[in-house]
Image 1 (cartoon, rainbow over the protein chains, first blue to last red):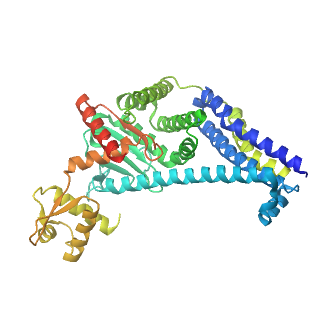
Image 2 (image 1 turned 90 degrees about the vertical axis):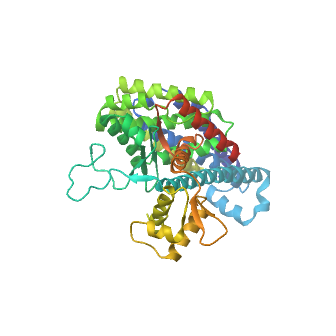
Image 3 (image 1 turned 45 degrees about the vertical axis):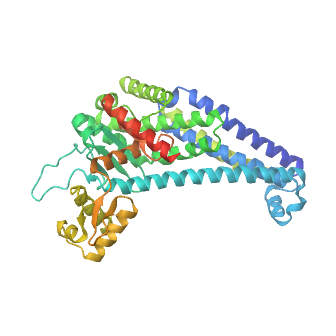
Length: 322
Length: 120
């Protein structure tokens, strides 16, 4: 392979990175079909993010080895041996890969670290005030207080906090916690509470935090890219819809809808534009529960998963072919 | 939850019920479950003090230990933790929050803003 060939490969990867960073997320965020099948849509988002990052770093690497005028792998080995002789294009590639790669890695790790620390601290503080729930039955007591058990819940996951404001949330992780306030237990009917718990449980089991985290990091790494913000909002909304679907399967749509209408605040937004975004998101979820859209046909879902897999494999394949 | 964690929680719960505070000896007597030794209780109180949950009062020994916040205020703070982290939504998922009166909302918002100001 010639240096020109390698440079062309680098250009192809760079184009792919740009396409995956700007128009593709914008189109995916605008599309209507993801709300019909949030699961496959989330897979597509993961593929776009992963392939985008891979092609960005791959483009820089390929440019770096192009100075060696050999195959990609051979060039990489030679590059490590004699850095000074890589030429101008090589240096550009080295700088680009180093900067982009390190920046992405640093922001992702810092963001993940911050989230894990916050979660850990919160869980520790929570344990001072939260009781297990339902409370372990007294000896000889048959009936348990608490929600109807639609299926077995892992022990020690639910926590009840003595707080008058109705609140329910999921603290994800290896040892997830689903936290419900006394206010929520008072305000919600039994069926609504069961639906809310099923929703939070879907978040905890599906590790939706792991699906969202890279996009939060991406937004922090490139705050000037509108696509990064659109991607994060879309992925968050799709994760909510995925959990809504799980709650519907367990309890039907009616109790979740009324619970959402009652406790739809989601979180406290200080800025008016945040409140608007939250209300808009909520309205979409409620209308989706009122008139559930037809899920995508099975073949379309298969095609989407195939497309996602192909997309992830594309940058490494390009690297091997070069 | 570890043994030590359990003890910290039990101690704090007792102190929340006694606004005037207790000496370490009184605290041991007030604990309902298996009563720890003096060294253990002092270690636990030091840990709680480091976390800012308990302070020592008075110069004379034995000193009295007092909870720094009321239980309700502590709970409100913990809930704010969960509900106020708007930028890092991956930390706490899917916050349902609702039906609070205007006054409550106002109070919570003010507390949030104060905390932001302290952080930033």
